[in-house]
Length: 638
Image 1 (tube, rainbow, N blue to C red):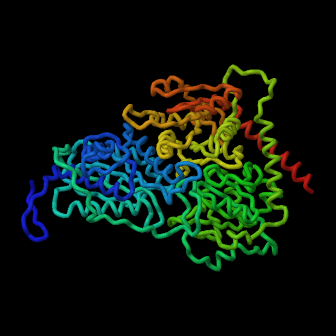
Image 2: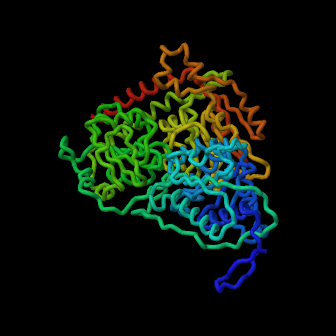
Image 3: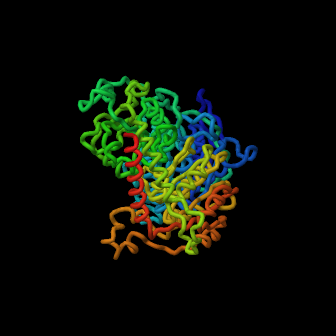
């Protein structure tokens, strides 16, 4: 027992809180739960043991948790890189309705990830960078040696407190607890500030935060009880900006948050005819990752073509143009564009970026959060917090026949693409397993993804093929790591999304290199939460995206395979067997839809053998056939 002084200065006793590291870890876990954290991902280690014990208590079932321990859901992963992306997927999934028709959360929930010291911390860096650029609230809790051991050559000790640099919203080097008076209150205050920074409550710029937590021995509980819940030091921070109008959440990083600021004269000018025309300006809406339903509503209100990436959350409805990247080169379509309104962050298409870079095109960027805005082509004339009222109300308008021309061209393009991808009924069967092409696989995945489903798309060719062929009346929820658009962590991200949305069918569509890069994401211990997830892997034995770029030209053929194609020859079936994951191999178009239609329970992998050798030629033929079909369709319109 410990003697303390009460409010009346009379001495009294309280239970011994136990080792300072253990007591502080318990207070921190209580504060996380009180401030809205529901999921924590833990990678095991010794220096982080105080947090591990506290989280294990918090994860116990109702009725078994010690008094004072809050209720949290714990996920344990061996690999810190996988743990970081699992946390990212949990945060990403938490921004969306648990089931269609249910209310959408106001914002993603913050998710904490715990590691021990040393290289364990560095392995979080890829997920931290993705969260930084995508605006996702990760709370990094990294255990560290106490300050007196740093710089002494102590084991597993490095300078890790500022490891993530400018990629985190807040970084705090927290001294080892000593049990001093007021320490618990100060820790709660620190957690309150960190959570406010992670969620962007004050800044409007959510993202990862880092608390580097020094702990001294002893690191193990000694039987002392948990402290009782306390509010001293907790601050519930109000969000600075509320949405200007009810909106569905964006499907990318975070929901759109628009400030109710007055529209400036300059913003109003963005809706007026330019000097080149006294009538309505030929306008298109470009919806990049995370644009949300606001982009679709804007296009439909004004009769503007909607050029929406799959993870925009806007790719549906009568204005959505699927083959837009192949139509922008036509002078009667892309050549006539006088204004582009950009929502979200476009990253997929070079033709779109050429459009945004044109000096004769007025670019209006709507960027409601953060200090930066998407303008990779350095050509934005206006950067607005919200869509001007004139545009929202459909009073900007479009030239006569503008949308109809785009829709006719898109229909012709779709027919041309389908004609190339469809396998004739009398075609000979192939024994090589290369009958299915990348775009045909993407089309099948899109068709199998229903409105209630969630589709996580990997970088490189899968998301670009989907961008070409996906045509949805009502789109599924499509998510992708487009913050930095890397191939790393995709399996773990998809697993996190599936854990966050257990009532929705979740499928991931990715390439073989993306799958292999994060194959450790399949590793889940027998004591961990189960998850239903179908992974569709387009296996072309290498990096076919490079074949579609300048590196795939015949002049580079002598080095292409080794330094760009990177064939690997991995037996994915054997790899899945090692992880205890169901595996199905599809080698022809006939077997594709049945394999996608019935994913079953648990984690499963559908491996689809995809032709890489003809990838560049197929792309060129698609472009040529679409160009010819569009020319005919537009000529027929007079």
